[in-house]
Length: 416
Ligand code: LLP
Image (cartoon, rainbow, N blue to C red):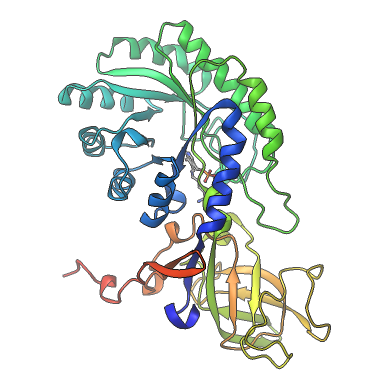
């Protein structure tokens, strides 16, 4: 693949994606949960088409995301439009295209929905976003359900919002939305949020609103480090069943990372090995422009070294030799593990993946940056005038190009 598509290249595996989807569906089946994929995690049309074929809707947070979903074949009625700063143009466009649900988390955004609904003669279905106030469950940058976060109303603000909502003729408040964070690996906060959400939902219903949908958001984490245990879907499933027993309404979920995270890798090539008193650096041709997560959240992605032509007897087919730490088996005892500081080529000190024990690497060898299916290509940038990489989907054992590498010309497109 490195030869065929060049490096770095994003590689997505359809089979893993579908396995993740099946696992999630199984988890929410007892409560008849409906899925709306958070497409910000990975907005490739091929991914969206695949998920749509498997009965998954989408969650969008910008006019652009709504358009990407429509381009992939989604109908408005399969789209939730969230976001704390929707513009009149975005909402107008979404309404014209029949988008089903809009969330809101400020009074003026609710007024905006009402105005656009009125102008277009359509009553908009809305969900009120509320903070479940689950104490810090994840990295501070990813925790959005607490006081101080820009997303959602506090519970005590609800009565005032309801009072306002009652006066508006072109919005129909029919749901509660409580996404509270991302990359959360423990079950307890999800249950706490679900309990809270149901309570709020019933409260609003008692106030006479025609409540239909309880949107529990996304945030389901994946193990990135060897020490992370996988998400306990069974316990969560059992918990949900208890909390939502007798619930009358639709239950919606917005998973992103859980579906695509471990299905994607970045295949990159070693461009330099620098050893000296300052440290031992392995310089890859992928860095923060392809995966900004380590720089932004201190995230760790496992790295797998791939030797193409090694002194150590591994040959071209010597795959997947060594992961991060020593407990991972090495196929040949004579392989010498070295400590590398694995970095990218970008002119930025935070451009790197961390320290890893790897077999001796040489220029031209390959490295896989694991679990890069979510929030890597979608957050990729062209910083340092680096074209964004090609993307490839492996389907039934065959690799197909699903997105071309950016052209060099695209770097100055639109400029005068
Ligand atoms: N729903 C809403 C309203 C969201 O804001 C998000 C993510 C999701 C669903 C999907 O969350 P997931 O299931 O993927 O955790 N760039 C960060 C993640 C930011 C998530 C933003 N919102 C990262 O790389 O970890």
